[in-house]
Image (tube, rainbow, N blue to C red; front, top):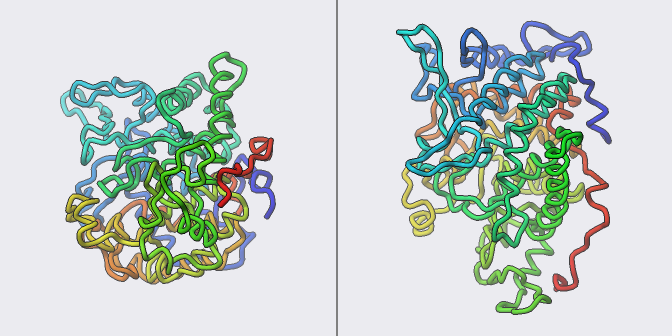
Length: 502
């Protein structure tokens, strides 16, 4: 498939065959029985605000019809739910979510005595019922209640991505073009593009600022944030209006940053067999603008596992690159978003999928999908996580397997033409997800065991499966969440400078 933009026809049409209750006469196969159970679980998680559905709770206990410890709508958790509703022809839920979170962005945000930037989006919000006044009100969390008190850097990026998906799905440009949405996009962009002491186009972040929301050594320039940043920049550039002075200025800044970020990520974060061999042979302590080892990565810091993990065919974006530090771990979300946003070149995208095939047991195992690989353990685990009892080896964020990532894998497979990988992974998930009660994550090197502290009936596990199934059934849905490579953005062609020749 060459053009996902043209494949997707905005404005609806027939609902997805995976939806309820409508079906499509285009398809001759029966839906998997799990789909009906999944839709039931997703709808039971819906939260209403003053009579209108607003989002989905993170988890719901069907046995008691109450929320298990989660009474909030998390922005990042809602993403697969939003896509499921859009693909099923129910955009109003997503529109309500976008407008209410935009309203929350305008609130004053303080943690202790420090005021957060205007562009910050909430990590989550909840609906509180006032029994005296008989009305609902929203309460937002911008990080002041989070573990470690870290603001969610990814929330604003996901909001922009969902807004663009809504626009592509419905063909309705009016929402994104409202003064309120235009201002919201600009505030997010201004906060990310603010000038400082940075020497790189990447975004500097604290640990725990994204899906990996606990201490896991992802501080600095984590791949997940850089890929989401790249995709949000591209979506913002498509939705911002140039007819206003503020919009035009922001678009120019976004385009400039995209140009630099694209080159930086493709050049310095990419790792394949040849690049690994080059780093292995680096000299250090080079003090000049002609330095080959620009980040002064010490070859002895390369962990032993990388040499066995790296196949002759394949590659991936490493977890982090900063002065004298390269995190060689694999992180699934960042690599798949890199494919969808076309931050990865077509060749790099194909190499990532080659790596999945070559290292199936490591990255997929018995339950898709490893959030990171490998697990850190022993003394390194003590130092990196601070002895976190939840992030023990092969559990949770430390090498745990997360079913929600299935939708990202499927989308990446469709974009790269590797549908067999997606179908095989979906079959693995279908064999256990419902039987195990839709858990949040799985433990073990192969993802064999339900996570020690995993919540059951986790909404994004449900939604991730539904989105994966709907994408397989109708690949044109990919147009909502995939961006083709912008040839103009890459001109003039930037090549690795002579100083990077080993």
